Amino acid sequence: MSKPVVAIVGRPNVGKSTIFNRIVGERISIVEDVPGVTRDRIYSSAEWLTHEFNIIDTGGIELGNEPFLDQIRQQAEIAIDEADVIIFLTNGREGVTAADEIVAKILYRSNKPVVLGVNKIDNPEMREMVYDFYSLGFGEPFPISGSHGLGLGDLLDEAAKHFKKDDGDEYGEEVIKFSLIGRPNVGKSSLVNALLGEERVIVSNVAGTTRDAIDSSYTFDGQEYVIIDTAGMRKKGKVYETTEKYSVLRALRAIERSDVVLVVIDGEEGIIEQDKKIAGYAHDAGRAVVIVVNKWDAVEKDEKTMNKWEQNIRDHFQFLDYAPIIFLSAKTKKRIHTLLPVINVASENHALRVQSSVLNEVVMDAVAMNPTPTDNGKRLRIYYATQVAVKPPTFVVFVNDPELMHFSYERFLENRIRDAFGFEGTPIRIIARARK
Ligand code: GDP
Ligand code: GDP
Image 1 (cartoon, protein in one colour):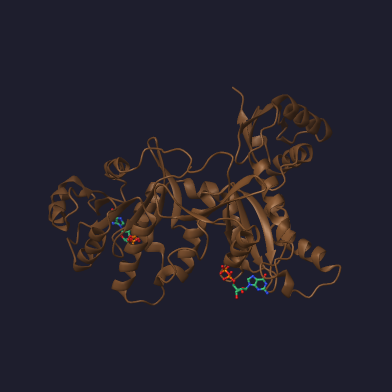
Image 2 (image 1 turned 30 degrees about the vertical axis):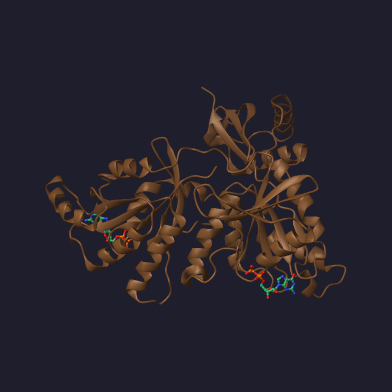
């Protein structure tokens, strides 16, 4: 569940984003299945052999107009804060520079493992250029070439040596983990405080197993919850806290560790483009989603206001048509009690497994009702369907030719499955596969 995090640091132009893209490969385009929603290319899941991890390109975290050296310094600090293993990247063609030495000094002070990559070693003759880099004090420098894809295997092998053994889930299966995401000032921290205060619970800070994330754990009505890495509860005061890319990074990290993500919108200000982007991350990650319209106290209302808002949200967040919408006020605590029951349902559906026999009845009924599409005289044939995963529920539909499964038919099947089983609050995935 909690994958190791690798961060790439180094001064500009050494090839960080080139290496990041190489390591991430096709991953990013796969998650971009929602039109208009793209992940910022600074954080992604990745795989190397049997290892799954997340990778951050700290160079992509722009830190405003700060002087050059402050920027690299802060990027190095972010790497230390966020990562389990740091790839320190340098440029073999330029040798060790003063800026490299500054980065090195910051990295010494952390006790995070550092793997030193020397990039732009595009051919074997250049390999002796790496010896200089022993002077940085991080042991063996690994020659690589981002543009040619050379040496990355050895570099990643070395990084993977520092991955902690899979320590299983941080929390028990029965615990519901949720996080709140949304742009600054929508009221995320207020909402957490309201929830925790309201339930008169004991808040305990549970240190994450691999990182120093601070989660709040509490129990209500017999159900244990963990609020993941709450916005505003951690390390206030660092310069980079307020930068947009950094908050995106934090949000993505929190989403990944959650079962349910609350997308918080400011009822007073309405929906803006950034809300949509943030919501897209939760959808892409396959988490259950609840849309929370906060500051409802500050909205001038009549009996139509809520319906209008609902319509507006559905128009803006078409890809989240499964997400329930809650209107509340963190300030007055009005309707706050409606939140946990909805989180419970979303979480339950996220982990729901349906019986194969019933699933196939539903799919076959759907096909009888709405014949499968044809392409060039060839008709899509559906043989059977099976649920292969939960969180989110994922269905494989075995067919004669997956190319014939058009988006609209997939959508139709999804709707039939939803009609039959509910799945409110959770995305579901349908994968067409050829039956051999
Ligand atoms: P960043 O600023 O550290 O993210 O660096 P970029 O990834 O943007 O790369 C900076 C420049 O170096 C680009 O022009 C890349 O094409 C180039 N570059 C990256 N990796 C290599 C490499 O392995 N060999 C060579 N010759 N050029 C590279
Ligand atoms: P965050 O940045 O998303 O964590 O937002 P905060 O919780 O810090 O809240 C931002 C501002 O919105 C603060 O001034 C809060 O007092 C205010 N605020 C939060 N929730 C509500 C609410 O339900 N109603 C009103 N009127 N203001 C709120």
